[in-house]
Amino acid sequence: MDEKIFQNIFDIISEFIPEGWDKMVFFAGYTEGSYSMKFYSKAGKGKYVDCFSFPGASKASLVKAFMKIDTILSKNRKELGENNAWTIFSMIVDKNGKMKTDFEYDDHSEDMIAYEKKWAEKYLGE
Image 1: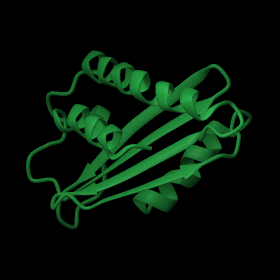
Image 2: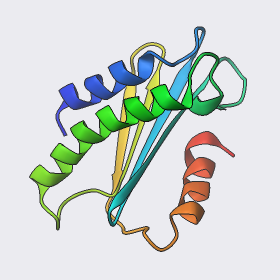
Image 3: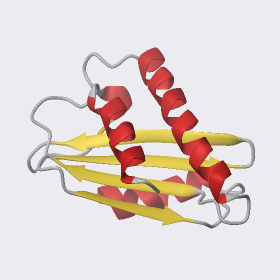
Image 4: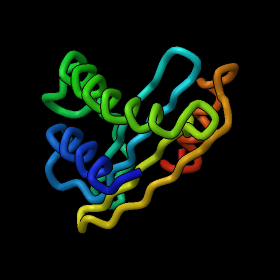
């Protein structure tokens, strides 16, 4: 995936991230006919905070942001083709701009909720 895509996603998300953040973790999961997105931020040695709990972030504005991000990611997944498209995209960005991305290709349609719990353990230490 083009680094410009990562920057576009971060630009959309950054409008919501609370001041004083140290690390942000973004999740996008695609299953047959649907997608799920969420992101978290943490400051200092604190715990990760879910984007829906950020001060001033309404559910409507987050859903609108996720729809924008889906437009970007769906285009990329379509370009990759059905057999090569990733199903899970994770992006970690720290306050210094260091970024790490991970892609998974397994189908989690049958157990996305269970998978998201495992994902949270891996990326958020929960």
